[in-house]
Length: 486
Ligand code: GDG
Image (cartoon, rainbow, N blue to C red):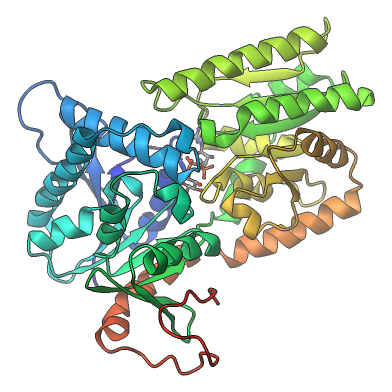
């Protein structure tokens, strides 16, 4: 069997309880710990002198291969082009996009350098799976170094509509770089459609839907395939963690402090894409317009810090501190704090137990590739007395978790009404919604995600080599048109 090589910007430090905050790390680690293989990427260190050297560490079936980044590389590749240009653009925040051509040059340089570091570690039959927006030029870089292996790419964040992508000056180079992979995977069908739309309408390429639903793309002189692969969790594992923590200290503390009040729970990296300000305001609106909920419910927002050296992240932090202070000042009583805003990280097991102890999971990003918290919240519930998920329509997870109360995070009144409905929902309806979502989560767990992607990647020779007949395509579906996925 071929060895699996995972490449991601950051190789997450793994503690006993799994990786710390960050969806990619959680999903990738869950996938890799079963197959074994190598995980290659940045160690998180920024050495101040000397050339960074690769460090290899074996842990069970996984080899961690990590390397530091020099300060200039960190600034240009990671903090600059990846997180100040691509992240906001891909989350539809063209207003926050900052672009500097030196940073883009640094982004390409670091991709090439990382690829050169990986090459000596590769074997001929390795399957290489590259993750996320930091590493879009990685396949081009490996190919220039002579690597012939199969190389797949999975984008964890949304792929934006063409008109938004055009805000990133080197948009064409980026899509051309994506086309150098053998397989490109997206979280949802709308992301896949947006990519195909760019290929056809901006790059003059062609898209054919193969009988099994995969898109066969020709563009920039390359042939590749693309599809949607919604990432999952291990719902039963999360449920066990949550159950085990039911009588643990964090849950006991929460319950004794709340004196029987209900809990609305949110957990997000502190990121402007997660819609936290709108969420705080909708909770305020709930207290305004549903006065019976005052002093009956608290909203707990856990938001571990992330990318704190970027302006946009300092701004969102200040805004949230101001909003939570203002709302608490307005409604708090001697015995009741409406919003608990906690700017720190917790262990995975503690989070699972807190999810189970709360009545509403409040997950309302403005844009999100998938959102694993939504899936973890549902998984953690007590099947006999489950909580209700309130979920943004702009999270990829909303495509699957149709048993949630789906909201538009810009509609503050609508979100307040959904919270009120969630807090008063009868048990029978909560159970029906929970069962529906749990069935979906079990059917598409994280190993299904991994296996579907790797199966398609290993079949690529057949798909790319000869143009497979589009035998079942209905008449009129000419090449060059974007056809709907499956
Ligand atoms: C990206 C995409 C996509 C959060 N706080 C703590 C903690 N977490 C864990 C959660 C969850 C993960 O981090 C966050 O995952 P999300 O999916 O919600 O969001 P992103 O980090 O933005 O992830 C996203 C994902 O990649 C996977 O493809 O779903 O759309 O943006 O697992 O539980 N974990 C711990 N302590 C915390 O305080 N241990």
